[in-house]
Length: 361
Image 1 (cartoon, rainbow, N blue to C red):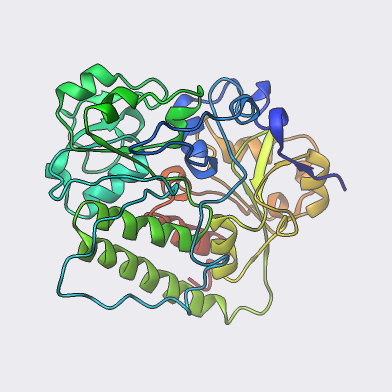
Image 2 (cartoon, rainbow, N blue to C red):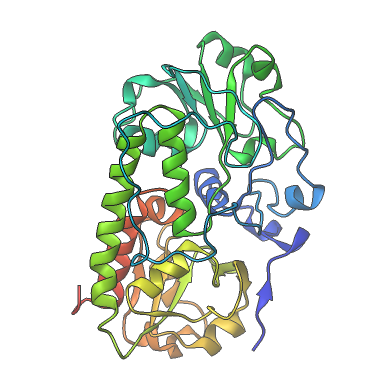
């Protein structure tokens, strides 16, 4: 069996050119590592990292610095609530120095995951602009100005008088700091790398809450997420005959999935199933030979850039012999909730649980 790791310029090759821009950026939202800072110029992204995503996607295999290497629902305890506001962070999630305003009132959110979290924390009135791919999210104000994370217009941003810009690592893909002029005017630009683990997502939520002075609201999101995951995990622990799952995030001919060290893998384990590529690490390219040899019981897909990804899988040459296809167990999982690393993963977790074990959940 051949299993191909994604690395360097072979990641997301030119055969991904047909991918829609929204889906490409959502995939990158899972994969990419922050390379920029607030207060200091961002280090340039390596040419290898830039080339790895072809013309539309940029990826990194390195995870966000996190407090624990692996997250478990059982071990998570909500931090004690404090009567005094949490101290403002002096570093962003990439470890770069930042100076955060004492009272954040005007926020530009340059990634869909940030926007969704801010809305969930009740901060819709503080958002003054968003990244264009956040437009389909529930609660988004259609009158908000939109910016392209790949080419943010600093002059137009400055006119909005933000005191905080939440930035995506995608914005530094060209090797330059697009927010340099904004930082030089004193605007805080905080970069949040895309976390690869559930614990990293918790840490991101806590960071965002502290950053905008809403630690309690962030903690409620974390507590709610943990409670939902614990309910699923409790059922998952009772499952003794574990189904084997192949989760496809990139369709043929350039198939992509993931191994361990990815929050989606953790979610497969929480529902009581096994990832057929769990022996691999991080985000991986998958050959047809490897997928067919794995012979999964269930195939999940969140691909959104082709008309019908489920039917596309079912009609591939040779795939009619795969157990999941023969049994009709090829199921679509919501793209947004399974792609954006924030509290919204709970929706995808529930969909995954019902898809794999409809008699248990």
